[in-house]
Image 1 (cartoon, rainbow, N blue to C red):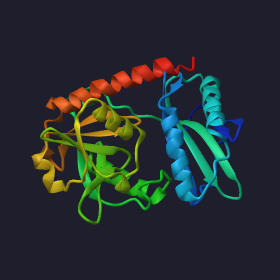
Image 2: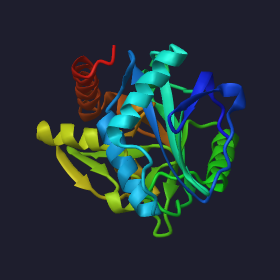
Image 3: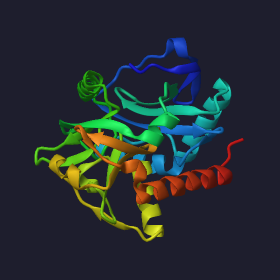
Length: 273
C-alpha cells in the first residue's frame, strides 16, 4: 500500500480522509504519476494518453474521461492546498473499476546531483509488460532492495539478451560521439519525459538512434542520463563503477536547458491558478 500525503484523497469522484485510505490491489491495475508545479499538472495530456495505452494493453476501460480526470486533479490540489508534488492516478479493477487520486511522497534530485551526476548499477531483470505502467509488488521489492544494498540512485535493467533497457522507474539515454541513443520503445515503458526529450532532439537537429547498448559498451560513451517525471534530465556519473563525464557533455547540457524551457512554456500556457 502506498504512503500518501495531505489530508484527502479521491475515490472515483468523492473526497475521503487520508486516514481512511485503503484499496484491494488487483492483478489488473494501471497507474500514472503526475508532477505538479505551481498548481499545474505537468504534461497532463501526455500522461492521459499513456494511461489510455496502458489500459488498452491491460484490457480495462477508464471510468472517467480525460477532462473529468483533469478536473478531479485540480480539485484535489485545492482541497489539500498543495501546489507542488506528485499525484498518483490509479485505476484498479476488482468487482468494479475504481479510480483513485492521491498525493504520494516525492524525492526530487538535489542541485548537487544535477551538478555532479548520479551513481547507477545494472541489474539483470525484465518487467513482465514493459509497455504498460502497472503495479508489480514483487518487482518493486526486488529493485528497492538492490538499490538500497548498493547505495545507488537507480538500477538499470538488463534484459535476457544482455542489453540495457531502462531504469527501474526511469528511462535512460546515452551519448556516443555526436549521437543520442535510447533503447527501442518496444523494450521499455515509453515515458512522458522520454518522448519530450526525443521531440526536443528532433526540433534541434540532434542525431537520434533508438538503439540498445550492452553494459560493456559504457566505456565508449561521452555521456548518459536518466529521464522521468521526478528527475527530469539527470546526468549519470558512473555505471557499474565506470565513470562517465556526463555533466561535461554538450548535448546533455543543451537538452537540460531546452527541457527546462519547455516546462516553463507549458506552465505559462496551462496554468491552473
